[in-house]
Length: 67
Image 1 (cartoon, one colour):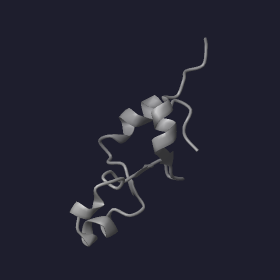
Image 2 (tube, rainbow, N blue to C red):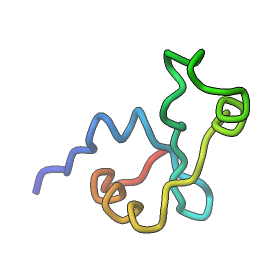
Image 3 (tube, rainbow, N blue to C red):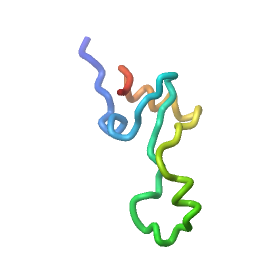
């Protein structure tokens, strides 16, 4: 059997923690930030963990895990 391919978007957008949870960047941080207040920008800094409901679907797209 040939190897299964990992979705290219998943490689770029997600990384896995040591416990198997998925980290992702926060949406809404690229442009038009002047319309957001400082609290919004500050709280969405860095990365977040993907929700438990979405994690199994994303893991199917990366059959051999992520870095």
